[in-house]
Length: 364
Ligand code: ADP
Ligand code: MG
Image 1 (cartoon, helix red, strand yellow):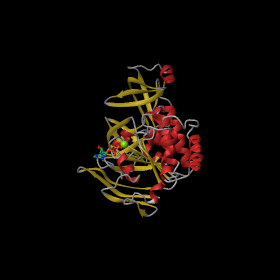
Image 2 (cartoon, protein in one colour):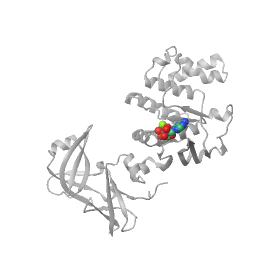
Image 3 (tube, helix red, strand yellow):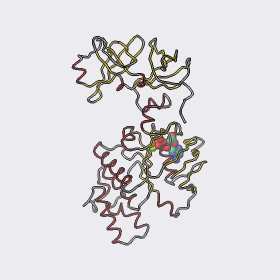
Image 4 (tube, protein in one colour):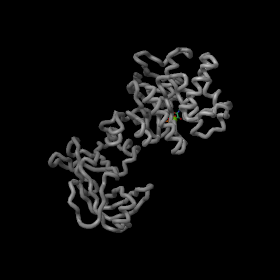
C-alpha cells in the first residue's frame, strides 16, 4: 500500500534518516521500534505529510505523495496522532469536531458522528468537559477520536502510549486494535515499548542510526536479532563473544570463555561470533545432573539474585563465563537458591542464537 523508497532526511548537515526502505501492507499494524533519537518521529512525520524527505520517495498505491499540495484530497486518507497529545483549551466536543468543521460538515451530522466517536472511545457524557482538564489517557483518546472522525484509512501513531499508566495504555491499545480490525485501518506506529510491539504489531522494523536495520514478524526479530545492537535492544540477557571451533553432528560448537556451547548455525568454522541466549531458555537446577535432552549443560556457582516482579534473574559463574537464568520465586524457595551455592544450567542448541561479529550478518 505504501512504498517507502530510500528516504533520507538531513537537518543542519546531519542525516537523521540515512536511507529507509520498506513496504507497508494494506490492513496491517506496522510498528517501528528502536531507542530514542534514531529517527522514528522524523520518518512518521514524512509519512504523515508534515515533512518532506531530503531524497527518496513515498508512494501511496503507486503514486508519489511527497509533494502534495495542502488541499490535496489524498491528505485526508492519512491521519496522524502525535506523541504529546495536544488538547486545545476548549471543550472535548470542539476538540474532536475541528476536522469536520474544517470540511464544512453540517451541525447535525457533526453531532451524530461525534456522539458515536465519544461512545467508541468510552467518553460518553464528556462533550462539555474542558479537554485540558482530562487525564493523559483521556486526552490521548480524544486525540485518536479527533483524527479517526474524519475517516482516514491510514493511521500514524507516534509512541501512542508514552507516559501513560498501564490501564490507559490498555485502553489505547484496544482502540488501535479496534480501528485496525473493525474499520480496516492500516496502522503505522512507533514505540520504544517492545512488549507493545509484540502485543499489537503484525510486523516490526528496528530503527537504528536512521535506518531499518531489521524488519520482519515479531517472531523473526525477537528470536533472530541480526546484530548485537538489536539483541541488546530487544533485551536478550546473555550476549557472549565466541568462536566457532568445529562442526559436530550438524551442530556448531562455539568456544566462549573456555566453555564449549552447542548451537545451530550455518556460519563457517573459524568465524568469530556472538552468542545470544535468553535467560528464560535456561533451566536451572541443583543436585545431581538430571536426564535432559539439552545439549548444553554447565555447572557453576550462584553469584547474585535479581528480582524482576514475579521472576528473578539468577547470575551464575562458571570459570570466566557469566550467565543469567530466569526462575520463579517459587523455585528460589524450593531450591533454596542463594549466592555461593552450586547449580547446573541447561539449555538446548536451538536456544542459542548466533550472530556474526562485525559485519552485521543478516541485517538490512
Ligand atoms: P526518535 O523519534 O527515534 O526519538 P527523532 O526522529 O525525533 O528520533 O530524532 C532523530 C534526530 O533528529 C535527533 O537527533 C533529533 O534531534 C533530530 N531532529 C529531529 N527533528 C529535527 C529538526 N526539525 N531539526 C533538527 N534536528 C532534528
Ligand atoms: Mg520520537
